[in-house]
Image (cartoon, rainbow, N blue to C red):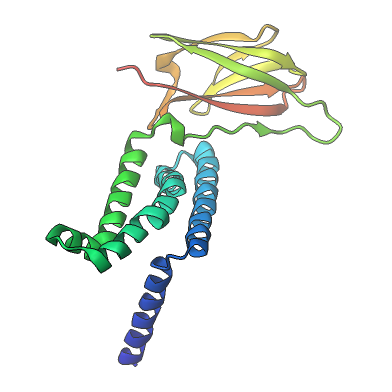
Length: 225
């Protein structure tokens, strides 16, 4: 039984390697396209979940996804062809070592980059989502949230507000401000805001006259050292 499992495992590994090293143009495009599609989907889905839950693990999935968008084509258009060429023609010791271990080196560098991205969280990796709550037949609330992240006070306003009765500002589940009339301008002390790994976070809700939330915006500002 054990030998059978090992035989199937070795065969599956050889099949995987044969696909990994398949180097015809059509295979390069198929593998790269699949990885780009998967990476973008993982990045977007993780960003949605993180914007709601703030789970740290989502940062690593986001980093994995966004890096895969670039790393997949790089691997199959650059790394794999170079590896195959070196295995056939390498004359130096360095070339032969790289050709034998290129897969391990490539994966090691990839996961190190994932860890670095998830740790430092560059702005490029973050996606912000707005959540509409309007029902059928109800006018859609809209407006652009514009903020100036000052040294001590964050100043914000809602530009081009449409169908908004009042605005509620929350952070960490607590209401910080309620702005009743246009122009919807407000100020927030930095010390009031919830600190996360990706910056200071607060939410802005557009509400109707009954207090029903029509739309929610999530805003983050950088932490001052």
